[in-house]
Image (tube, rainbow, N blue to C red):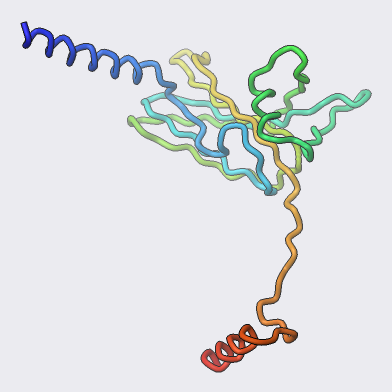
Length: 183
């Protein structure tokens, strides 16, 4: 009886662990991180594929209407919570128009682990969406994973000169010592 209970417990644990992995998505967006803010003029898109599948990777800029034109979303006041709200739309969340940036790339993974990586340069500040679709044999999309990225202007950093001539005391002594050592 004890042995049967142990076998049943081991079997239950194995079944629970296996089903958890069976329902995991074949593709996951590694970079940029899920619903994040980036201070850069380029994006590194990296996708991890954990099954022998074909995925399609696309980048969209989300735009809003201003009169007759579509303009970039002003993300200067965005926080992580705003991106989370956009990714899980509900009533009252603003809807945007998606504009494709370049062609969607197709990547075929032949093994149980593969990575697709692409650098996109000259990105303007705005709201972007990375979308990865897993393709079936007939070319239809079976599952879609997406992530929003707010690209902001990089804040200007104030440069500090380590060896200012106005330093006094111990800092002046250290500066002189370092200059003499590395001369």
